[in-house]
Length: 139
Length: 427
Image (cartoon, rainbow over all chains, first blue to last red; front, top):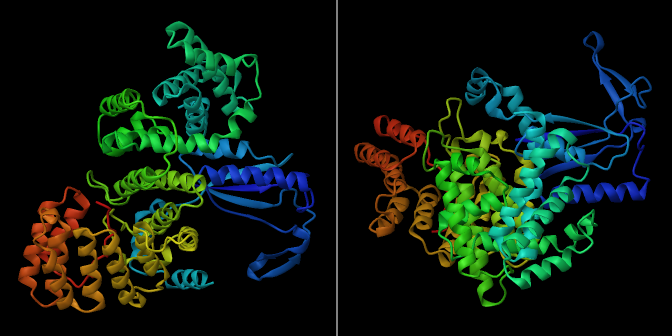
């Protein structure tokens, strides 16, 4: 089963400027890599460089970062493949991220979707979804 | 299961391979090392529900195991030399030694020794599989039994006997060198791929795919690749498994029935795994291993992975890769897979000709894919009656319920479904 570990850095860091912290994080990543559980990971630029598109009233509205009103922002994520939720928690517990919070969320497998949905997808009745996925896979 | 219990199970899965490997270096006996690690697990089960999971659970387990080791060696007096060695190593350590240094120094080498021991040729193949899942995968005997439809007691017996065999044969705790190395490595890769395949195309049971077993094999393969970064074939095997695993969710239809490769919705392939597989294949090629048996199979899988639609598949290249594979792995099963590719790349008549060339081979007698492939080609040539008879024969030869159902449906109504290019096995 796959889990996404979502890193909410809190007060911990605004970017990759603390060399020692980066090194510790590198060791943590390496440990997961060596254990064969790490599938993917990425760190995100600070929200100051980001933007939000919200759809209040159905119309897209763009807000530039930073987002002062939000306490919990995403700093990065790992995708790991492990045996259980408990194992995902155990790996997250080893993260040297200071005063951070790590949210653990299981990734949906296709087989978990309702049978009805799977059948529609198997018959290709979600053309817009398929087209979107194809565009994604081409990138 | 309580939270603490599942936390302990999780710690065990992460820590037990390193724990057993480290202990095996000290006591020079994998069986004894495994017993000591089990003792440490029992100690954890006794104390963690009260105290909580410690900050460094791996070090805690190692301390507990070493304490048990001292007790055990004193009590049983298992030879003066070992006792002294162990005593020397542990002097002053009993309270709270610097286990991090101990654990991290050579732990990679120890793990690699453990991998080679678990797959040692002195053991039968079922014993290698069970021991590998147990020592390297951190699976319990219950989990192994469930995975292979074998009673737990049988698995436990198999593991006990395997450990005894290793002790009796005085198998050294070392990474093989020289002439022996290639054959021993081949055995390791074979065991991993066998486990993967049992998950990818179950030979028994009701489910045609058991992803947990694929994930176990893939995880162990990635571990071994990290331990042997310069061995091309290890990367070749990992590439093959990553690419095949990428198709997992597209390989099963809504009712649990198999969906053949060319019918799969490719947008459902896991592109992270495809990317990882292609990267591993690139590594194998850069190390000069493009023509190794696993790398070649991975290259074939990569041809499918790179084709955006089934129609875009480069069958001519696939046939050429099978030709190369037959050079290094002259197996009738590979030849049968080649015939499938020929049937698509060069037409069903050429494919049928290739099938007939190998159909008398004794190794293919009773092998359900032979009539299944022949049936498919006959139907494509318009010889429906003969084709249906072949599918019926194939259905009578498989033990997997899902696969039998698929074959029977083709025996009754021969529609125009292309047949999947089968993964090959290294027998």
